[in-house]
Length: 440
Ligand SMILES: Cc1cc2nc3c(=O)[nH]c(=O)nc-3n(C[C@H](O)[C@H](O)[C@H](O)COP(=O)(O)OP(=O)(O)OC[C@H]3O[C@@H](n4cnc5c(N)ncnc54)[C@H](O)[C@@H]3O)c2cc1C
Ligand SMILES: NC(=O)c1ccc[n+]([C@@H]2O[C@H](COP(=O)([O-])OP(=O)(O)OC[C@H]3O[C@@H](n4cnc5c(N)ncnc54)[C@H](O)[C@@H]3O)[C@@H](O)[C@H]2O)c1
Figure 1 (cartoon, protein in one colour):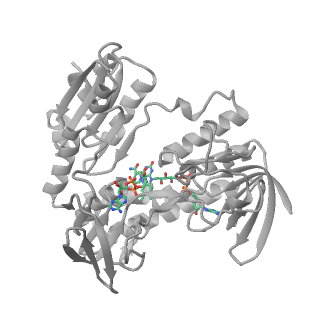
Figure 2 (spheres, protein in one colour):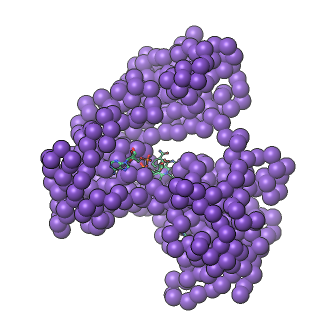
Figure 3 (tube, protein in one colour):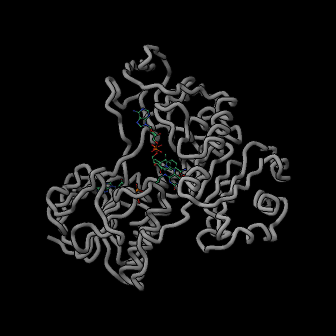
């Protein structure tokens, strides 16, 4: 059996950043990635970056086929860059293969050519990501016409009609994107409304804008049966209705990727949700084995995987003060047109927690920049604690909100009073300057 100091399983955001950092310290690192099409992980290849590129190009009115060409060129370039970022380090070996635990620190790697390597590592970092949840519905089996977000980013044809199962991040982003490319989209949602974790006024505004744009919603509806032929898919719902379309996109969540990882050969425990159990320092139940990113059951965002790296790096080489407990004011964006971004508490949650709040709210149409870009839809809402003057949360549904929300998050994270945002000098014309008026 070979021995190595550091073994990273999976080429995801946190793992690759850690591998690079270890290499720069002169330490030996082996990075095992099961697919040569996944150097750089989900975000680069089949997640954030290709989907945001496709969304932007749908807004620019490129054709669907042109959108696919653009995203494919982008991911090829970034995959190659990511590979060399690690493989060109003298102390890093990138191994093409699938890793499987044989013991707590022993791993067998099945190489692409069928050969095997066995490795024992002093430190193991598991960064294997997540995979789509396929609900247990009769006939719902992935195939030509029943796809996940991965296939939806590179389909060789544009569906004229498409159903989307699930109205979460992927469901809404892809529904909006495909609609903008000209596909007739129907979203299947189990609940009466979408975006239930937002304040009702915000969620209703987004819902109405999506409906006005021409996206159909089947609310309060469960999909109960699916029948697929070579080029069509027929869906049957719990109200007895059915619908035949060109494709079905399954967007009903992603679960930690632990399949075939051999965890049963280790003392690594799982949570009740099937994630690798970690403490606030991201240590698993086995010493010197950590879990990073989606696989540890934390929020599924690239920037959380990156923050997992920061925590482990701080624990290994820093002052050991960082942990998941420091996570506060973590923003999120759903990349609709315009994007929907939030940080901290909603108005409803702040009231429920007994805060003495003031709500500052303004329509995006009141901002000069919104007229410059001709995207006047949306609103800004900031929740302030009147006792401390601190910002408790914000939601921005407006053009460029994915950038502006980071300013609010910074103010929250550094415990600034809301007046700092109110009295800042902002460049003009920008969406950020709204805070001068909004927070008066
Ligand atoms: C369509 C889509 C859009 C998204 N958009 C955004 C967004 O806009 N912003 C955002 O922050 N997040 C977004 N996300 C979520 C984000 O992509 C993930 O949270 C993030 O990439 C997870 O990173 P990770 O480090 O956990 O692992 P990943 O990047 O998922 O990497 C895991 C790697 O491990 C490999 N692997 C798995 N098992 C093995 C094994 N046994 N042996 C060897 N290799 C293995 C996999 O092939 C993969 O390359 C999106 C996700 C999707 C699917
Ligand atoms: N912009 C971003 O940051 C971004 C974009 C895409 C994905 N992501 C990440 O990827 C993860 C996965 O995205 P996702 O959209 O698949 O998950 P999600 O958890 O955001 O949404 C899944 C949705 O599917 C619904 N659902 C589940 N089972 C269903 C069923 N049988 N029928 C109908 N609806 C069903 C759920 O109620 C939920 O609304 C997210 O958690 C998110 O963190 C982030």
